[in-house]
Length: 106
Length: 106
DNA sequence: ACGATAGTTCGAATATATTCGAACATTGAA
DNA sequence: TTCAATGTTCGAATATATTCGAACTATCGT
Image 1: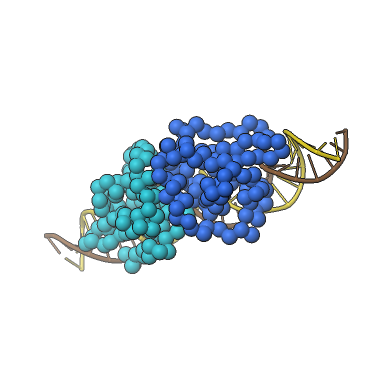
Image 2 (image 1 turned 45 degrees about the horizontal axis):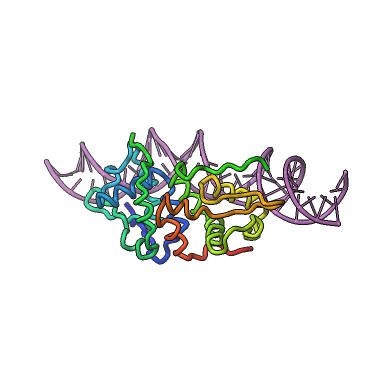
């Protein structure tokens, strides 16, 4: 896979972060990464096809929320927790604390 | 104007709130309401036409962020701050604290 | 080099949002 | 009751997002 682009934390825009988090599938992914640590894409699909999940991970990546790293044949995804916390203090905590059941896995 | 519908705070969905806040114009409106208290629609247009602002206020209303009340010939809009704070503690504080310059008025 | 696995990219269909002018509704005041 | 001011609604154009199958790419193990 080509080089994956991750924005520097300073160029992460609040609107983009909020937008990325406003999709139930993506919010669920973020919740799971926050809770369980890094994971592969397919471990977090909610029964959706790979191409759909790839799209969602891309949105999360471009918003600056997730960092993806190639690890052998799989892609490991990690929440950029400390960076986001630094840039937008309290935001992730508030979002994660809401504990809404957002999407049911298929 | 027909009766304006406002969702009860318990039925407000996080996704919808995040989505409503992800638009720069709407985020600016929320910032201004938070800072300056209630305001009319037209006081917060950013040079956008009435119909556009009406749309944005409707999204904010339906997301549960703003309460609109008819006051004589004008519509007064108020951030539902304490209700949102109760439902999603820390969320608005985090969003407002970011202080991003989000949209330039026209 | 081949096969298996994990993701990405492409393309096209569908759905959803945004924008804004024009017409309409509501109110208070002259 | 006519007017001006404030918003809403409608409609249509445009833009943007989502979805998912199919084809492709990269990596590891054999």
